[in-house]
Image 1: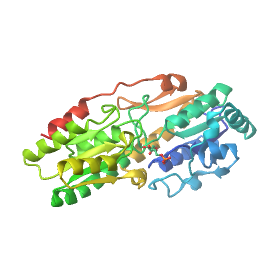
Image 2: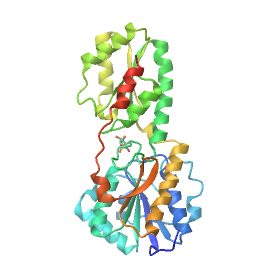
Image 3: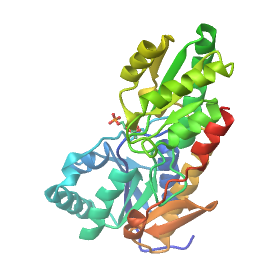
Length: 326
Ligand code: F6P
């Protein structure tokens, strides 16, 4: 990398934590140090920026974290960044701290906070990290692979007890607005049905029950249905299924279990590459970029273009889940 006009940067993690965030921080810090850029870590995301929670970073400050889940910089959701006064204060604090750029590691909400900062003149570089995989500008978000592996392993275990008791099992996985985790967990966990916000504005209980009966008559001795968090009411749905079908039904809500754990190789790899890329674009004097993964390659996109991108829901995986459940 060539020498550049960037002398000092800040890095923060924001929004829901995701496995691999630590590996991304490590990569940002070490690539910056390699390029003789000073780095400060900002604790608790934008909330910590607003309250001046700063830690000096060097290459050793990020030792022994590549394999750890969560984020050692801590994270928070920050409502103040949704207001103009909060954004103005954050911009002023970046100036006072002498930051030439701020690296924001997080998801959609964090990127929108960063975008507002960029409009006031703070140079922001965003790294996608959320277990939900719900950013339209990138084909990968750090944390997704670990989350789906956690989900798949939990489903394997539920399958054992579900089949032993010949029950109907509903497993709720995370994903408030997007069904990616549910789709991947269903395909890899061998579920017969998946309920996701993209396909089920309202769950058709009659159809679901007909399908449970149909699958039993095909010789299946238990039922495995994955529900995305965005659908909601999983426990209530389980009670209703049991009441109508007479089949013992249980709901398991995986919840925050899916946000934890040591990141998989895939997550560590993307985190390390994207952290490197974040500094690489700064060294090339680029401003306000989102690091993204498209067609097997890492790219940097203008933040406004990135946040305007819209991906259509691809129904293929949903259809395949149904075919394989025959
Ligand atoms: O980070 C994404 C996510 O895990 C979503 O899947 C989930 O809906 C949400 O965060 C939960 O947020 P919180 O940890 O604030 O309850």
